[in-house]
Every structure is written in structure tokens, then in C-alpha cells.
Length: 232
Length: 232
DNA sequence: ACAAAAGTGTTAACACTACACCCATGG
DNA sequence: CCATGGGTGTAGTGTTAACACTTTTGT
Image 1: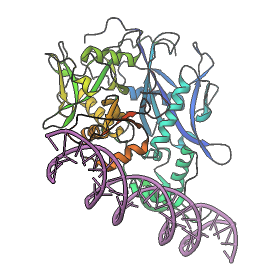
Image 2: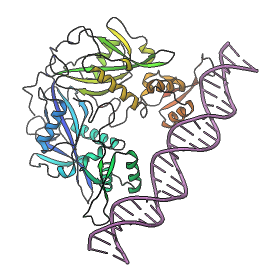
Image 3: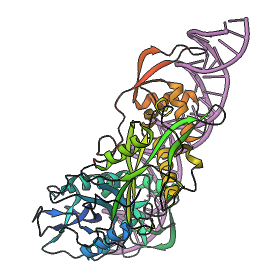
Image 4: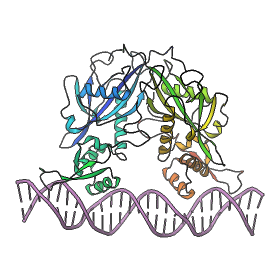
């Protein structure tokens, strides 16, 4: 393994699927993601995932965080590497290897995110016709989110530091797109032991004030790596 | 997103964690993987995962398959992308981004694999002191194998086309490193419906000849992608 | 006939689901 | 005091784990 001499033409990019829960049609919340309009060829004027080239001294996860900040002005509450796409023909302008990250941002922060002519939040399930192979990437990110939310406590990353049981349930319902039994959901969450009651209650609600909870651990993912997969 | 101008110094490599079940200490079988001795700096004379630079017109998974063939002379029965490692300081000779693949090879083929002065099969759990961050990569690959074998039918890729229930159970026991109840294991596997009896029996055994089974589907992984993650 | 492995049956423990019901608060 | 969501109890159902047991072969 010496230094390579012949494949310098491979460019390394990072794209990020940034997921947040935003109000949808009728009071419900849906999974959304920000898209950016391409201002150059190829795929000019098409919508695409935020991303950019990896800087020489920048880790891959830092590059993911940077593209997120440049697009939405926000910090992710969760970031994990999703997959690396590298088909030789996936970009018409040359060989591009794209490391894709998946990020979750808190709802109340996402509401303040920048939006403009070239940045638009889109319901994740409706994101089609994107540039490159980004349709495929979004579908994969959604599949990962929906399978992982059932066994890992990543839904917490959509919420503030304290939250009610109903708010956590609403996150699961929005992600899984189906109603959940409040009683069973409570017991299921309490059994995992990932959240702990703060002792306080949420006032200002229309009815009985619910207890507030806090995430017990910073809510990492399973496996040998700490929070969001191996350091990149 | 124009062509990058400033980060051509990122080199793209592929490494492969090649897993097979080989005879261990006392009649049991253990998960093994081939290592190659580095013949150059950095980490000269240290053991490392097989790998190499990605060719310009070669997909990432093809590069993984190629490094596997160059090392062991074998074809994998299963190949999936594991993770992409890209810390800026992970190689002392410059920035290297390594896409790691995980491969499974059938036991009876692995027995015929090349071994020599610079290629050695090693019990996967004993593989430490490797070059670069390869210790970490091997541990991650083993964790993925052990968690995935419980819900996906990847153990079939260690076996031949037809196999007995006991052989399949031995694979699970070797991977999970604990004995499994034959009766419950049988029911569990039959419930998933991933294998089907051939109608034949395995003769030449010391006692009652067991039924032979065959994998029903080519045993893909779940998710939106076909066999081994998205095409690369 | 015996040993050993293949394969079946039984049961208790556990987890999950649906839904009935009580509690607490704002209006 | 009523409507509404917060929160608890419980019975029915499905799944899992442990292990006793029967079957079938080679020696």
C-alpha cells in the first residue's frame, strides 16, 4: 500500500439528510428535511441534499455538521454516518464518492431555520425527483430512522431537554405514521429506562398537567462506538 | 458544487473484513479472518486488513471483492458495506479515506484459501495490535455480525447450498459463542421461513441422518436495498 | 441392544395488546 | 361539573425458554 498514483480523480463529498418534525396537514407533524436548489450543472435548478466537498483537515462528521450549519444555521442533536455512495457513474462530471450522514434536529430549533429561494423544507416522504441518486438516499435514511426508532432511543433527539410522555409519543407516531396506545407506550418507554422524571410538570396545558421527563443518558447508539458511530 | 479544487490529497482505499468459520481449539469452530503483513511503511511488518486503492472505474463493492480475491483467492458469498473511516490523522502518510466492507465466505472454501508468509488466518477475537485503526474496525465488524445474525439470515452464507439444521445451529453457536437449544433453534428458524427442506437426508453420519435444507431466497438483508446495501 | 443425535411435545414465564377505568386540571 | 387528556389496572393473547420425551440411525 503505497500512496496511490492513478486514482486522484476520485473526489470526496459529504451530503447530509437533515431530519426534523414540522407541522403537516391537519395538526399532525411529519418528518421534513431541507433541500437546496442546485445553481450549477449538473442537475442545475433541481433540488438536492445539502452537502459539499470535504476539506483536507476536516473529519467526515465535521463536514456533515458544517453542511448542516451552512444550510439551516443549526446544530444537530444527533449525527450518524448513513452510507457511502460511490458508483463510478453516479455523477456525470467525474467520479464523486459521497459519504452520507443522517442528522436529527430539535423541532423548536428547526422552526427557526433559514428558508429562502434556494433552501426549502420538504416533507421527507414527498421528496422525489432530486438530483443525482438523492431519492434513493432519502428513502434509505427514512427506512433507517423508522427501524431504529423502535429499538434505539433516537426519538429523544427531536425533543427539548425536558418533555412530556405525550410529546415523546407524538414523535414516535409522526415517525412511524401510526397511532400508538398511550398506556402501552408509557410502559414500554419506562421499561427501557432511558428517561427519568424531573419531578416537575408541564403547566399551561388545557387539562391535567403531565409530568416532565429528561433523557437519562445522552442517548447514544448501540455498538462499540460512542454516540454516532465510529469517529470519522 | 463544482469540481473540488483543494482537497485532491484525499486518497480513497477499500479494506475488507473477511469472515469465515474455521476449526478452533477443541472441536469447536471460531470466527476467523485473514490478515496481511505490511511490507512497507507505515506500520511495516504489522498485520493489517486486506485492502487497496480504489481504481477509477471500479465500484466500491467491486474493489472490496477484488481485495478479497487477491488475498484469499476466493469469492465472497456475502458482501456488505460496513463503515467509512476518514479521520484526518488515521494514516501518518497523508489523508486516507477507507471504505470498509464485511464479507462472509463459506467454510469449506475458506479451508482451501491461500496462506503464506504474508497472509495468515487469525481468530477474529484475538486480532489485536493491527496497523492503523484496524483493531477498531475488526471489533465493529464482529459486533455487526453478532447482532445481525440474530435477526437476518446471514449465517446461511457460511454454509454450502444444502445443510442440516445442526450445521446451521453450529454456525450460530460459533458466532454468538454460546450453546443454543436445538429444539427452540429449529422452531425459530422454521418460523422465519428462510429455509426449505430439500427432501434429502445427509448420509454418512454416525447416527440418525438429518434432513437437508436449502436457503429459500438468496438471503438478502432488510431495508430498501437488495442484497448487500446500496450499490456502490 | 445401546449410544447418540434428530426431531416433537409440553409448560411456565414473560411480553405485548386492547381497553376499561380513575385522576387532575381548565374552563 | 364537565370535557379532556394524563395516568393505572387487568385480562387475553402471543412469544420464548427450558426440558422431557420419542424417533431413527450406526455400531
